[in-house]
Image (cartoon, rainbow, N blue to C red; front, side, top):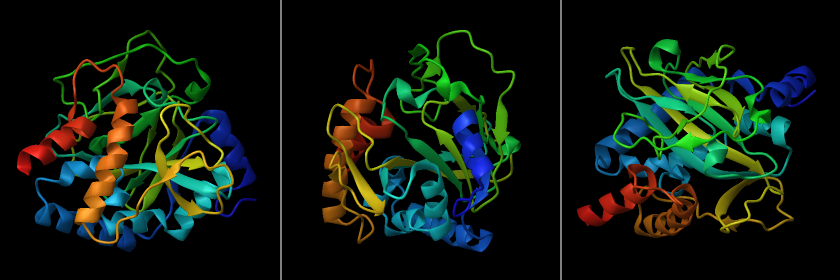
Length: 286
């Protein structure tokens, strides 16, 4: 028996590549985080895009989400007691019925081994109508499929990438979430999400959770240690935000994101909003 999950649930996660939903905080707590996110929007309307990567480096409340005990206990059940967070990304869908994510495998552009678990935390209702994440059970065991870039669409993905091959999505499952619930899934699983046709925005943070022995061969990146000890030293340490959008926070964030951009945009045909786009925007706005 794990701290949160049963042995059967843990085994099913590794077999199917996902588990959802898991309540990791009360709905009222999720509401508090949403309020703080929306206050960030009001204070920094031109900088919300910076939350698309390593949000915990520029917003203390984003780091607090990672420290929620039930959240970390669930992650520990899945990857062990020594836990790093490699990335934390806002995935916002407005109520315009446009934004989507095509079918993709995250390992197409960033391949952390032996395991990288994505924890999608909902701060608003995230059901089929709102464009929740859907995934194909067992597809984390597939070979990496070819992907193509589709710039100029309404995709929320960094390269607007989609799988460029035939595959069977008939068994796909919808990972519906209420505020305060998480969906956990393998980095390599085939997943997507549809547009938001609901009355409220879809507010989800994707948290990339890895054990300390995980590594990415090139380049050397950074992460934050959330629980346990790190005996492997495969990752530099991210600076956790002490002040919201402080000068020291922004300097550290920029350096970390520049390295991550070299991974996520290596070989890309176009610079895109998610990483290089954020830096271009920051430079233009002074």
